[in-house]
Image (cartoon, rainbow, N blue to C red):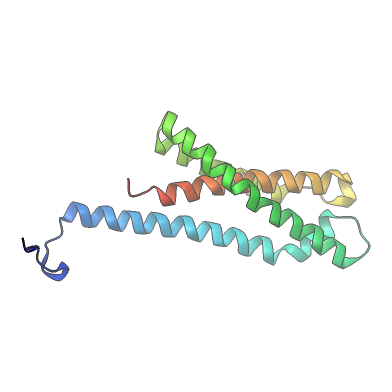
Length: 151
């Protein structure tokens, strides 16, 4: 039996379906923008973070420690996807997304307000790492929502 469906150009799209697709594209793009903005800001501020949050000495070592904090965030991102998927299953997607966005904002705020190494010593890099992990955990939730927005 021959397929009688008209070509895609001749098919009529439901306005509700079009609106849903536009919402999905905008939502996914916004989440992606926030994640790339996070990468950019941390990378841009890496020179400041290196000298402010790590013991003085070799600048290369300071930059490597800053890059290490950046890299550890990638590991926690997967756990964030799992965690926020679980939260979405138990409490709904809007609740999960709200928690994810609030955590991302709190992590960024804490990083902005952290005292430097000269003020609190070895607590500075530890707190930077914790704030970055908290922030990246929430990014994993945002990525989960981007991938499951169409459902």
